Length: 413
Image (cartoon, rainbow, N blue to C red):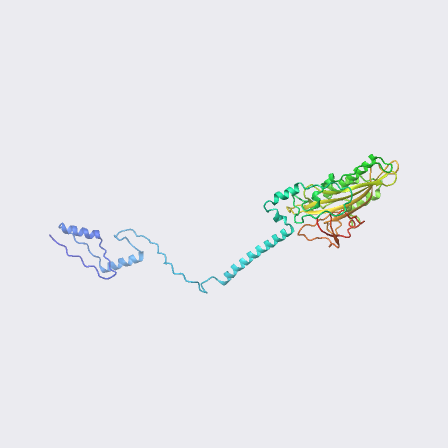
């Protein structure tokens, strides 16, 4: 039995690692025990070990058993460093800090502007806020849907209507909210002629005809949709006696070339269709009509009516409602064709006068121009005294409004 010399002792240097695997060493001991004469595994030389170590350092790592596939390993992540407060060099730049503060100031400024606009709108139109309170819609709708209707007016009232809630401003759904006109009758139905009777040699039927024709004239001049949109009052002209050429000629000139002294709005209600339109299809009307004998064969009819027009801006989605109020007083005469040189059934326009409220001052283009909330008037400044447009107790002064003078402020619309 032969024994193999013991293997060389490994180098005791700290960086030395044997290249003989456990499997090779166990195979050698087994052969020696069985009497095999195989040579023991040889330990690599020091130079070989140095080369192997350098290759391992260069390539990263090799298989511990030798002969294995090279594996690439990711470089371990750096250990997190303890937190330290930023210094004046390492912290955020002062420009960045100032920029953040400036952006915050701009944001708060924008919020402030929006709040100011909202407060202004609510101040002008409290209904924007009140309408959204719980229970307000049902209560307001109930009041607006069925306001107590006033009885027909038969004579001039002795005082102005009672004050109304000025915070209840008009809307598209309720354009007469907050106005005394909410209790007035609508349109032509509000013009109720009195009972006719025979006067001045005319029969009751003749007087009834004079009253009906006066109503027809008021409707054609102030309620006709085409006329309200700036059209020609042809139906009203058809009721005037053509044997009054001077009156018809004057009115046609006013429509063609309106002036301060000759305005069509002194007799006809007209609005610029490019500027405004009616808010709905209802115009509120209140007034009365009387008649008396003129001369033999003539009946003289006097009509005193106030018309309230709710308006919105044309061609837009604005829901702001403005009301223009117009009070008119007319005198028309119907004559017996057997006694007078007149056209049977036609009216003679003897006199007319009007007062306008919420209409721009100093504009003479043949239209009414209402002013709206949050809008500055574009016409001349008002110089007349403050007036209540719903006060029908005072008489109309000749020429006080129809010629454009005496334009004043109004206490309500």
